[in-house]
Image (cartoon, rainbow, N blue to C red; front, side, top):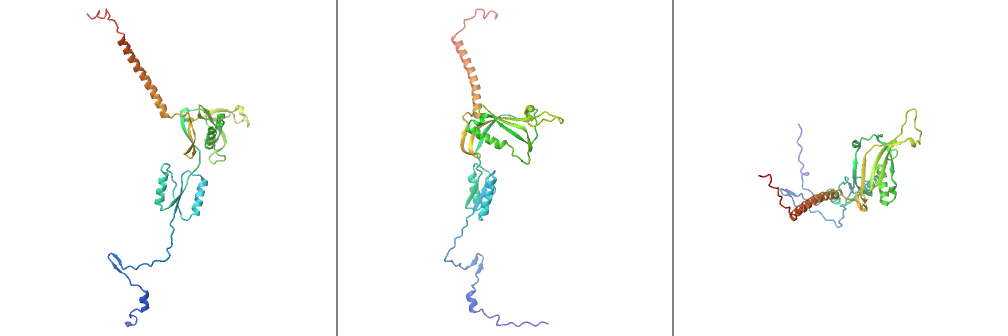
Length: 300
């Protein structure tokens, strides 16, 4: 049997004066919360806490150089936040302001692609390969030879358009999806202030036994493949899909205006017919016909 421990009166004695001085009274808890909360002591020197945060984002189709610069800025700014690319064009400012508020940031660092210029064309006289059904045929993925007419070197805006077409249609050398040889030609020519596009296959008649030597240009022929289209330049902008207008075509007529002119021509034909009818009626009223003697001959 275990013995019952005796209650030591000394352990249950009242707390000392030192404990009473350092131990604060516990506040009473009520239904409305804690009662008599201990007041926090205000420090003499108030420390300023900077809560500035920077939102770092960019636009779509940005160059690799600017993308790497953005990543470098992210590594240099530990107080920044990254976000997805912004695609909207017209309401770009409102979109960025909303993103800054949602991410709880105070400022924004936005990288936009500055590439330019850009050209706005009106594509006319379109004929697809399926529609033409031409006899030419070349391998898919082979590199084309680009040829331009001599008119491209006359005016500055044609030189700029030539450079843009070169950057778009010229296949880079040693591209992994491109064949390492040329077997077709892209032809760009200027006629009536329009750029006409044609695609030709380089055909060389030969057999396995009798191959054509290199440089045998006399035996080479061009066979059209397609498609065909015509580019009417409208405006050349200094920026990417916008910016200052570098060139505006003075000979450009919008399709809506062309349709309106055709409607006016048709309306003028109808107006001419109406005027002819009114002139005929006025002529009949001014020149009365004499009564015919034999008008009532067969009525009896």
